[in-house]
Image (spheres, helix red, strand yellow):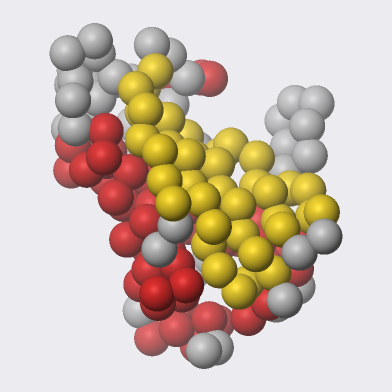
Length: 148
């Protein structure tokens, strides 16, 4: 499957690669696994799910974060067709204590991956609530992928 072609079919443009803003690597390629550092994407809104951010907005923000990770994959690998499988996604949701829809929010990330990579985009996953996230972002994801 040509992922660049698939992005074009879906009318999706990759965001520009953003350099790390702290002391970490945006990715580490070890053997045939690409580990992507936590990323929040470029958000138009900040705050907590269950207060300032709705589940639907959180879903879109998780999708945006995953799209930012696809841009990191392209930067790290040069060719998105080198992605063999999305192995694992860990989704962090900045939420109020009573918020319980974390899985529905992180579905935004995994839905994007399956739309782009088909069955190979469906990862093992965790979706967890957090008391806070850096810069008050609503969603952050980590992704691990197997590469060819």
